[in-house]
Length: 416
Image (tube, rainbow, N blue to C red):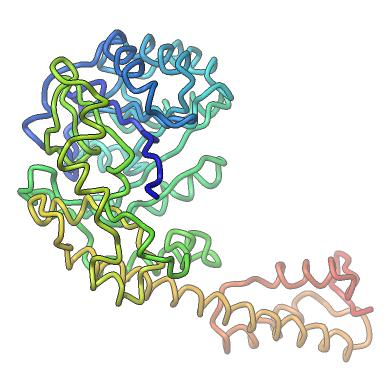
């Protein structure tokens, strides 16, 4: 018996134009350059899908640049009134204090997050990527305004040739300020199938260098490599799941399967959304293709690290449904290699740290009393040089103290 089909997500590109011209952008299709959805359009869209939407419909409000649409506030009000859970994507360059105040009304009332991209903390690097002078300071200020109002904000950090050496600083800045973030380490090919943005993609040598940076400060940024999710039952997973229960409506009213895949299914001004969702031949094909239909996926030992996103494969193969992008697959294998290397190094560090801690405890016991700090430091330096890891003496002493194994005063420490 077939499972009932419901619309689970709706992507609304409310503004086709953008005031930035990012060098890595994959949304380069000529079909998506002009047009704005009105609040009335959005209300009509949500009314049309009301009979076949899931109880919780996730709406993504994006562009182009969303805030170029003069009706963006009214659109959010419509979406909230129609009881959708929604995310707002913006580059933040147009966001004002008044806009940030306006967004506070949606906290805990449908707003999942406001997502912005910050490419570097250095204005000259960020602005060279966006092509808009002053955009770095404006985006950073927008993030700070939203965060100060407890609006859920998320920073996306795409990695590319122009920011590969400074991106870790963005991640550290976000972590320090308690702001959610992620680093996207692979640039998708452009949606016009030209691949003209791929010169920005990181090489495997770049990924190795980036790995070294993430392992600094006790692996503080090593979370970027993710974790293996295990091997799922691939026969139950749709390869084009992102399109199977989704619709993307662009600024001129064109209907597409999903953001970044601009094969036109119709237009809201001419076609019925229910008919498109259930009858469009392309969507019907997407609902039949399982991950297990790709022999490369069934035999892949890195599948647990793969997001199973179809966009890189489609854009690399000019929209062909049954072809994979070998470069993307190789990238997933590289991520697996670096994630496993991270795991090994962190486990090894943990073992070495435990050994040093126990040896320090025994050293203090052997001394039989107070040990002057300089003496401890000298001992620690000699031990540390043999294991080459970045934990500190203060860290070790603090742990021993918290475990009630030693007493400390201003002169040094002694074992209990």
